[in-house]
Image (cartoon, rainbow, N blue to C red):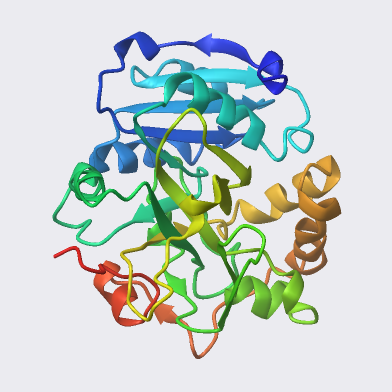
Length: 316
């Protein structure tokens, strides 16, 4: 509630919201090149309304968002870090506007995949979750990267980033249970393999719970890694079965990455003293190639299910 005072409303179209609408919640800073495709992707999935918090952009992205007929946007120049990395801002928007709605919380470089997403809209998934009395849906963050140096192919505004970053690590993941919150903790992939090869335990977490049937009493604790109440984090079967889950295709590693990494290191607004961006900065000047002989080229969600990275569970 206190952090909500830091937000200035730029475009409020919440009067258009209807019962049952599906929302996307997102914080962004200087992502103008990514936003056109991001919006198209989620509109095509069936998202009805977008909520954005713009954190001090100066690349025209705030004006662009304010012009979109299905977007409500707030602006702040306050500390991203002191808002618990944007979570406080989004929790407030969810509390005020999202009660009773399905909410997908993602970054501009994250693309949600779910079982049958090639033939069924997002509402088919949320209808099934409602019928099954399931309130939260998990998705592993899967880092995507190009074959060759990450700066080799320029990314154009509005382009599908998967046209460039279409490779991933099919294995190389560790998983453990967080005893305090009950969520799973997943690490690995190219960031552990390349940027944190000397200390893989410090690699970023890849576990996410991005899709939630929101209640005003809910709150994200740390990014979308975990929620309160704790029962929302039990997105896995403890008795040997398999619950339905998805994947977030993470397209951070484009030619925009080097500039972004250095900017964020200078801003010092990220987790654990920006240890993640320190690791990036130490490697990115060499224009690294994240591809290796074990890399696999992305085809579709069924490929990821075969590899055990997502599951359709008992949704047929």
